[in-house]
Length: 178
Image 1 (tube, rainbow, N blue to C red):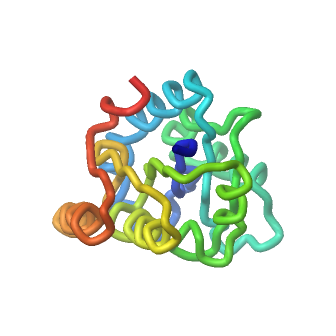
Image 2: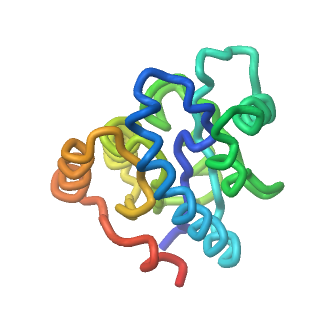
């Protein structure tokens, strides 16, 4: 059995996009849950990998993305989730954490074969990332209380699809790294 990594998707965010108003209520709820997951995963020495949109800032790196989010009006959603020195950071350009990123190679090099996906948006990036993880033969767990949505009905459907069609384990975050 390999290692499990916690993957934090798109939580370093300025919330300056068209769907932000719909996303913010769910983001407010999941931030403390993800913060707890980060704490427990780090205590167990589980690798933590942030995979984040670059928001079209092609010359930026993770430090600049973090600084911009922390300087924005929703910094309170980013501060509890700031990467520590042991965290890894992968910048992505599209929905899936795997699409044209080095993540698959990184996971293989680290001996990681089990992923816990948390972050946003359940019915978009989390769903597509779960599918891409599945087709790459990674075991996926999605804690339902640690993923934020824009449309609750679509998020519920996405979680059912991940569980049924992709073999993902959908659970509560309290079941992980206890």
